[in-house]
Image (tube, rainbow, N blue to C red; front, side):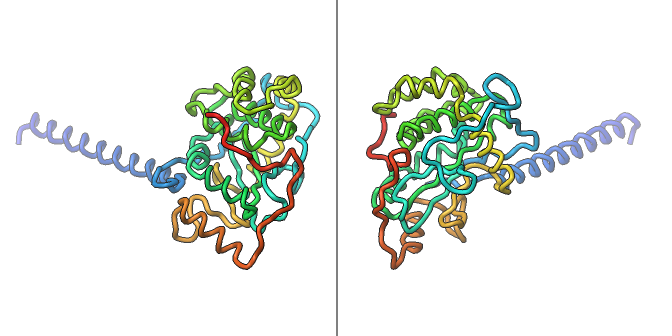
Length: 283
């Protein structure tokens, strides 16, 4: 074999080795992505927004602190970080950790929303919502914080459930930090009857509940959760899976019925700030 042929053979072998290494790196990368993926709701795949090690606590003006802590009305639970929806004496509790910029959260909400509403209105479950801002930390921006503050302002007005749904039905693409614009959040409030008031606008523009949101997000990061959405039925994770079964409308209803076996539906109505949704909001 000539020296020129030997060089060509060596070059081809080097290229082949590099391609093999590239393929191996790509397989490892995909494995990591799959490891952080949530099981698709109703067959849809979605990726959990992972908590970045350097997730920030930026406020709307870029500072690291957001002022005195002001919790929204009607919050409950440990450190007053849960926004309750549904009858307080419902036999089962659905705990939901969400980020309004999180695409997987929107997929979960948009697929399971009618079922959750049905179960809440029947007194079979109550929901405790917890807000996180991990997408701000991972992608940059302040949309998670601004939207969560606006949702807390809606809680003050007794309109959290309706406004929560509107935000997820109108969620911008993940890289688009549209929720950082208070004007957009106020515009969306117009889709909820009676929410767009001077008090709500002032609460949104002043960032009244920013520190409370940041405290909630810190609790999420310190809670050992993998990502959003984190969904627990009576403390047991159901998202992405409960045992070996994937989450779906049918399975979710079955899990609630199993948990509630022999128990009566709740009838004790919560305070207005924690009321259940009374109808689907406009999209």
